[in-house]
Image (cartoon, rainbow, N blue to C red; front, side, top):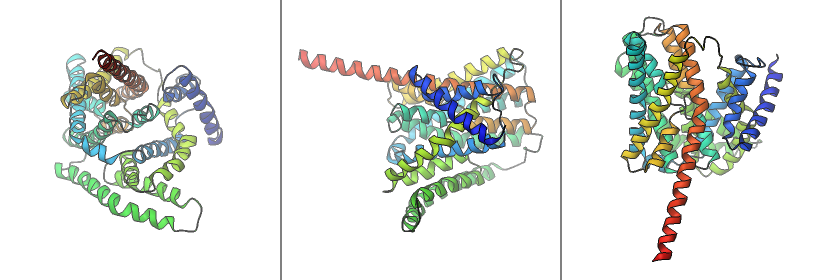
Length: 400
């Protein structure tokens, strides 16, 4: 099938899927993710992962995280950096240790393989979470700021741990001996570069493009910054979505923020972002699922509970009530591109075989499918809790 018809099918089905999800009171992203499962190799075989879908989906997730940064609040992120770091740390420890113990003790895996499988489950992707937070108007809430901050810290921890594990245990092309400083310094350089460019270069770049006599100057400038920051992130060993997020965050501190948000969102949500959501579902197949069913089911349980419990405890440690703390935990449940990256590295370093690689892809995709439902459930609980508190306050005022 030509790429043109693939795009037509994706755009039609994702809008129908989002419509049905909203009608059933589910997050719209659930419908779009399920389109990938139903139209993909798992069921109807209308679509399959390929070069076109891979490239479009990569651009989609980059633009999605750029929009998240554009609508972000840097002051709020800085205010909650301590709980964010704690949530990220516990969110890495809980699933990594639990999965490693399950694999080594329960299924007899070598400890090197067990640790790597645990590391795959430690990676958070907030691309899906961002969509739910936007739909439920929680992007700039206290919980939203902690989730986004924790996702940044989680990304750094995962990349560093990945490099350490590959250098210690790997035997393939992916295993290259590196010192710890060689792993850490590029990441530190990334944050310094993002800060310098974001504070001084981004406003000047936008101002310069604003003076050009051409159509959609500022929109083009924003897209250039989005992909440039993403490219710089990859060059320094970080996730491209992290670079795009920082580009959006830098623009959010300028006077161009509102105008650009109105321009960039239609570009992302009309074409690129739907392809990204569908691509997640396309990775699901039901081949050999029965053989590894118990193993996959237990890993899914650990993947969900590890992040949920770790994130909730981290939030509670910094004064959140349990309702809000559970929102933070649920926001860390989703996996995505980072888990897929770690899985590919583990396969290349001969630390997992093809069967376990497929199992980890299934765990990643199913966890990502379930995450929006969990997040919405806990957000609705906080809304109910808040409403009940207000009612109680009004009753007490009337009595007094």
